[in-house]
Image (cartoon, rainbow, N blue to C red; front, side):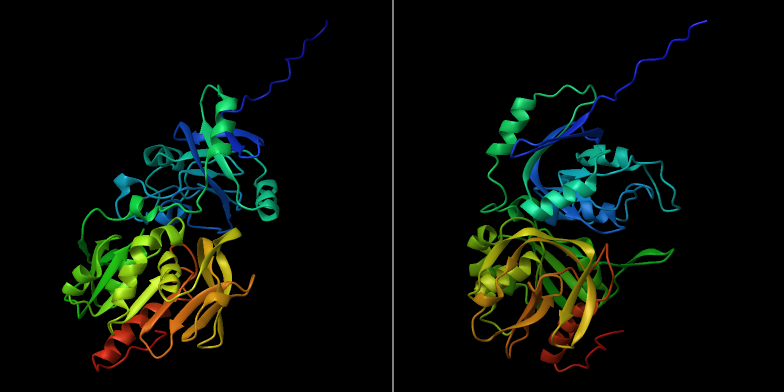
Length: 401
C-alpha cells in the first residue's frame, strides 16, 4: 500500500529587519506589533536584558543581543531603569537568536513577550545574531526598520523606503524626549538580596541631577551615600539649579547626539563650572562636559554596548570591567590644556573619563552604576561624594568599601 508524505512545511516569517541598504532579514515576531525605525547595535551582556531595554540611553536604537538565550528569567517591576515606565523610554526594538521560553526564576513576575508588548517594543527572534553582529562590526551600526505582523503580511517597499530615508542619530537630540517633565526628589536606595530596595532616612548632603535620560540605579547609589537627590529636567537653567543650593551637581546619561543636546545643555554646564561646586558626569553627561570644556565628540563605528569592557583608571593604575552603552565618544585629542584624561578603553583606546585639573570636576564614559554589569566602578560615586565632603571640611569615605 502506497504511503503519502506530508508536504515540506515552511514557517512564514512574522517579523522583518530591513536595513537602509535594502537587506532584508526574516524571523519570528514577538512583543509589540507594528514597526519602528532606528539604529541597530549589538550588546554582549550575558544578563540584564530588562535593564538594558529600559535604559533611556537606548532611545532610537534596536538592540541585538549576542547572548543566544534571552528571556529565560522572565521580567519583574524591580529591574526597570527608566524613571517613568509609562513613557516607555528606551530601546524601540530588540533581536534574539532563540525563541523566548517560559520564565524560570524566583523573581519572575511575567513573561518577556507580554512585557515587550506592554512596553511597545517590537521584537524579532530566530535569526543568526552572530552574522548580524559581524555585519555591524564590519559596516557600522545601520539604520533599519524592525517590523512585526502576526499574519506575515508586510509592505516591503514601504519598509525599505523608511529605512533608507531615516537620517539617523547624528544631529538628533533625544534627551528632550526622555527627560523628566518636572523636578522631583529621589529617595530609593540600592537593592539588597531578598530585601528589595531601601528608603533613605535623613540625607546629609544635596545633589541636583540633570536628567538627560537618567537610570534609576545611578540615583539609588547617590541616595545610598546620604544624598538628597533632586532630579531636574534637561533644559533646567543654571540659575534655577544654583538656587536649590546643591552640594554637588550630577550630569546624567542619555541618548542621541551630544552636540545636538549640547546646544542648550553646554551653556548651562559652562555656567555651573564657574562655581566651585563638585560636578560628576556619566555617559552623555561626560560627553557634554567635554564639549563645555572645549573638546569635541564623534560618532563611533560600532559603539560600545555590553557589560564586559575593560577600562583603565589612570588615577589608580587599576583595570576595571565595566558596563558600556554609547555610540558617540569624546575625541581625546581635542581636549584642551587643563583637562586630564583619567580613563581609557582597553578595547580600542577611546576616551572613557576626564577630570578638570585642580577642580572638583570629573566624568566617565562608562556606567559605574552597572545595572546590569559588574560593580567594579561603584567607587566613583564615593569619589564624587568625597569631593563634596572635602569642600565641606568633613571626614572622607573610603573610596572602596
